[in-house]
Amino acid sequence: MSDAYNNAERVALYQQNRDIALRNEIVLQNMGLVRTVALSMRNMYIKFGDVDDVVNEGVIALMDAIESYSPDRGAKFETYASIKIRGAIIDFLRKQDWIPRNVRKFAKALDKANSMLYNLNGRAPTNSELAEKMGMDEDKMLKMMAECSCTITLSFEELLYEDNIDEPSIKDSGLDRELLHNEMRKVVADAVNELAEKERQVITLYYFKNLKYSDIAKALGVSEGRVCQIHSKATLALKAKLGGYVKGN
Image (cartoon, rainbow, N blue to C red; front, side, top):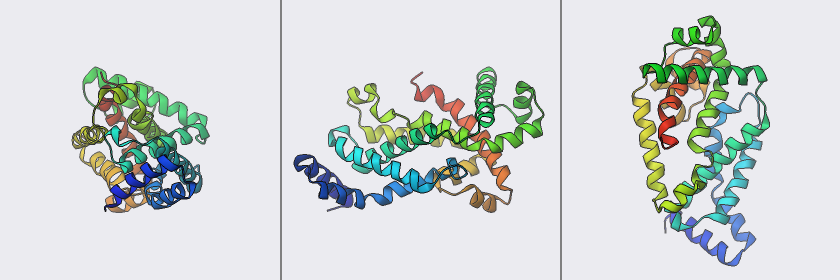
């Protein structure tokens, strides 16, 4: 049997007999999945939080997935569990309030300015356009963009993942959840391909290669701060582009 089939079979068996030992065995079998998701999100919390705390939240979400999974959802257990884990970690990070208030305030204002300019011009704004809209010096804005990269990333992740797996419209539609997840990945990939070259490189290395900012900086031959700036700008562009699709507009 494949690992995927073993997971689904064991989860179904646990749901029948509620054997705690079997549940713990399923958790141990899928700890690699929890760690992979937690590490893929580390740039959002590495400066403020502890990876073990994040992994613990992932384990709780994994146990919840074991309780609530059904093959009728149209997704493999791993797909369902990974989305639950990611959503739980996003919720945990948001509630910790690790990020300084001034950083959160700037990120919110930057997101608003970017969305307004995107909707007005039908394209991602330039740095100078953003700085002018926010009424600040471009160099100062870029420095603050690097500082708030984790906040912007969290906001983008919330747009894509938070509670999406339990949306009533998805539950009741009869749609294959795995196909829905794959469709989202394609939409995101298409949006990434439309980014400027440096932005596309950073997003690809961050989301698809799961590299840390420091590793991306080495790969591109730039400073880590510059990577944070590029990542913030690219994420804002993706959020503006994908917002309507995700919300069904």
